[in-house]
Image (cartoon, rainbow, N blue to C red; front, top):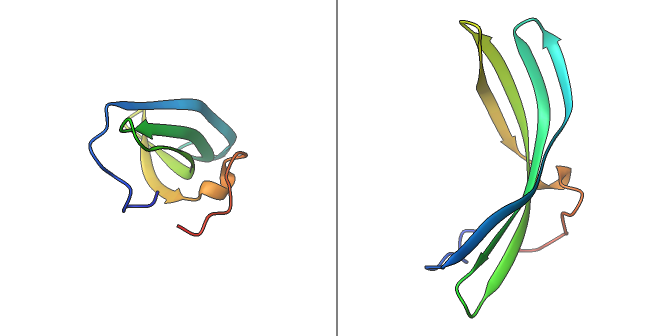
Length: 84
C-alpha cells in the first residue's frame, strides 16, 4: 500500500478475502496465498487497494502460527499496475 494517501477516514472495509494455493510442506509447515481488497474513504477521496500476501505457517504445540509473510499484491487477481 502506498503510505502517502492516509488521512483520517470514516469508511473502511475489507472484501473479497481469499486463501488459496495452500500447500502443506510437512506435518508442521504449510504455505499459501491470502488476497483481499481494502477500501477507504474520507468523504472526498476514496481508494481500493488490491492486496496479496504469501503466508508461511508453522505448527507449534499443536497450534498453527504465522512464521513468515511476504507482501505480493500481484497475487491478487484484481491487482492493477500502479506507479504509486
